[in-house]
Length: 396
Image (cartoon, rainbow, N blue to C red; front, side, top):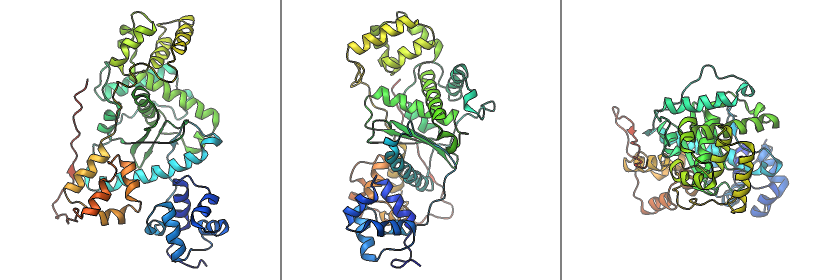
């Protein structure tokens, strides 16, 4: 039988270590606790003493209560990462844990604030086997999603806002690994998207959001086991990429804008379509607006201009940022739906983690705690959840 803190849960120690992207050796160095002891704690064969648990909690910047919570049940849904290479294994493990925390935050807020309903089209003819999807199928599906959401075929505004309006919970923060641009998944019927805030230009981030939309629409039936197969992952990524291109650059309207397929003409279209020149070259090639030789010359010319890492207008287009989670927190606090103390009980993470994963300004929660401004307000029997009005984006 384990000794020490009886309520300690070793699964939560492993979760915390992975969420901080730490090895057992590194955590041992940070805490002064032997690696064998930490391993025993994680496997549940021993429990730490209160003093040791305090040291572990401080090192991982988490409240002691975090390590008392029950184990999570394994989700059946797939998280769509762009790489499963050994070099991203630690980062993927960290993001899987962060994703769980992100879902917990959203679930708490949804209990107090009425978010937009999930409004995704259901395609009855979508094959269970994604390998049966053709480029033409995906092009048609991207247009169908636009039609379902009433977007027409003109350039759309913020893709992030479109996702949020239709029930997607979106977060944006630094992922810290070059090969992880963004990821997404369904949880209990709710779509979630995580965007990397350290991934360069607005056009690239916008394309990432459309790419993740592609996964949510096309690959909801893909199991984690199927995703782990390298040949399947490569195909799923290509399909989501193609979906993003078709969603952002609809064939008919984009083709009519490409009168002369030169770098200058594509660059002139960038502020309107908010897509990179690279994305427009690929789309133009698929639409046969340019032949293979023209495409080759465009890539060479683009490279010679130094646009492989950064294109013109990248610093002028606004990055599309999620707003629902932070707005929901503000609304819940203004309505006194819960106190910081209640928040700590419901979400056993550091306030800094909650701020970071929710897009709140640094110090928003800790500042409120220090001032003692938030207090609980018991809901009446007839009280309904507050409805979260979506801020209007007046950009075209």
